[in-house]
Length: 309
Ligand code: 13P
Ligand code: SF4
Image (cartoon, rainbow, N blue to C red; front, side, top):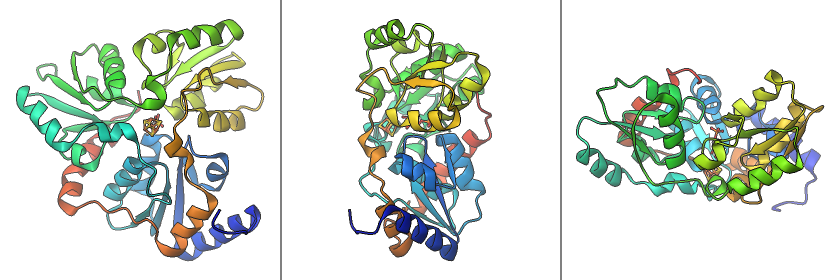
């Protein structure tokens, strides 16, 4: 806590600062509940990138992790993008470097490099097209069959999307620590405990977990799924923060988290105090070098042109 101000006073001063700075707050679906409540838009990586690209706000406060804020800074190059917590980083995004991707590309001449948006700007700059969990299958299907495909950095999303698109994929061996350690056994147990529940899994989960699910979905895909289903209970195989927007959107339905592994500490760092500090003092400004930004923008814009799966 950086101040003794109560929650209401903090929220009030954030709203005033937002007005005076012509700012918008974007928040990911895994953010703490209070941060989701003060965000102007809450969504998945694809939705947040689209909002950053189309917003005319002068300042974008990005409540999420580093690669998301970096993507916003690349798309909104003439605006100030702030991330309230400098240490809010995605470990998977740092499992590949630009030089390593370049070296792999050299081993597979003629290949198309598809990069999950959970990656550094430097890796995006080496890529042909980006994707998110919401459009990975469509992105792979959009690639002419004569080109081999390299997928980085998430091996699980790459494997899942390759299977769904019917494409062979050279996989980078990166993973999300929150999803990678979920066990198939935990899902079987949750199904036994909640026999009427449907299972929604994020495609960052290992394939043996996805195979036990009724649907593999991005976080915003999960928010819509209960509208399309007559089921009233759901086992949610993604970061535990997702339970908050699900329960808020579907108050009559029940949602269960099946594994203690499903926690991303980086997504929990943002506080009202740090959002206020960001708006007051431009802490922390997200900057991407102009050359990297120019090259990374191309695969990101290609990604934005591909519809959701
Ligand atoms: P979504 O794009 O589905 O919101 O996922 C982002 C993420 O970091 C999942 O771990
Ligand atoms: Fe990265 Fe996983 Fe956290 Fe998402 S949940 S931000 S992929 S570490």
